[in-house]
Length: 406
Image (cartoon, rainbow, N blue to C red; front, side, top):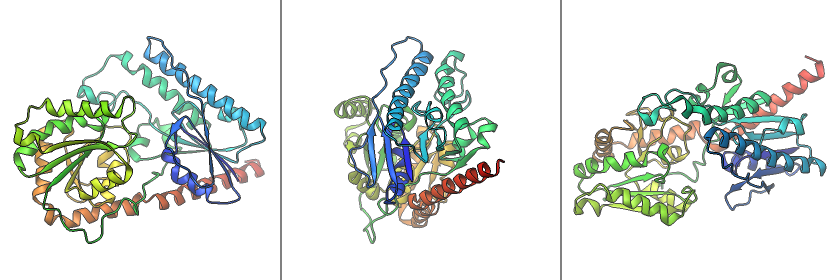
C-alpha cells in the first residue's frame, strides 16, 4: 500500500499513524512537510516542502489567503512531481488547515483522502476570549474567515474527516460536524509514566510548561498567580520551562529573557523571587523528569485546540491544576482527576494550586485517576489502531459503493 502524509511539520500529530503504516514492510510511506523534528521514522521517507514566500500585504486577510495559496501551489508542484515519478498513493492523510492539501483531489483523484480537521474559527467564545467577551471589530475576524475556507475545501473533498476532540468538532457548522469522527492521536503513556516506587519529594515543586510568546498557553496568567501562591506556600519552588523547539519565532535565549523580565515585573520580595526559576527550553527527557518531579503542574489553555502537555502531565501521575475552559473540561473532572481554576482569576489559581500542594499526600487516588484517564482514552497505540481500523473500514465501504454503483 502507498501512503502519503502532508502536514506543515514533521511528524506532528501524524507520528503514530505514520509509524504504524511504515512498520508494514510492503507499504511505501512518504511524508511531506515544511519543517519539523530531526528524527527518523522506520519505513517512512521524509520529503521537504519548500516554504511559501510570505505575502507583504498590509491586509491581514489578504496575507492569510495569499500565503496559503502559495503553500498549496508549492505542495501541488511537489505532488505533481511524485505523480510524474509514478507514485500514486492509495491513502493520503493531510492537515485541513495548512493549505498544502488544496490541490490534492485534482492531482490524486482516486486516492482515499483522510482530512484532519484542525480548527474552525467562529466569532464566539474563542474569538473574543482575550477581550473577555467584548465584541471585536468585524474586520478582526477576516483572517479567521479566510482560514476557514481551507477547512471547507479539505473536509468537503475528503473521504474521511477526523478531528481530535469533541470541543473542536463543536466549532464546525452542522453539515461538516456530521462528517467528523473524533479520534485523538494520543500520547505514549509508556514514556510519559510515573516512576515506580518513587519517594515523595520533601520539596514542593510547581511546574508550568509554556513559552511566554503564546497567549493561548496562559503564561502571563500563570505569572500573575505567583504572588498569591508563594505567599500561601512559603516553601514551594516554581519551575517554568517549555519543550525544546516550542519557542519558535525568536531565539531560545530571547524567550528566556522575556520570561525572566515578566517574572521580574512582579517585584516579588527577594525571599519569594529566589523560589521562581525560569529553566527555558528543555529536551523531551528533561521535560518528562520535570513532570515526574512536580508536586503540582499548572496547565492553562484558551478555548482552542488542546496541546498534548495536559495529557503528558496526567500520564506521569502529576497533580494537575487546569484552566476551567472548554477543551480542558473535556478531560479534567474537577476534584476527580485534577483541579480546575479560572483562566483569568489569579487569586483563585494561586489558591487552587496551594490547596493541591497542601493536600498532595492524600490525593494519591486523584493522581491514579489522572493516569487512568490517559491509559483509557489517550494511549497513542490504542488510538492509532482505532484510526487505522476506521480508515481501512471506510476504504472498503467506498470500494463497495463504487463497485455496486451506489
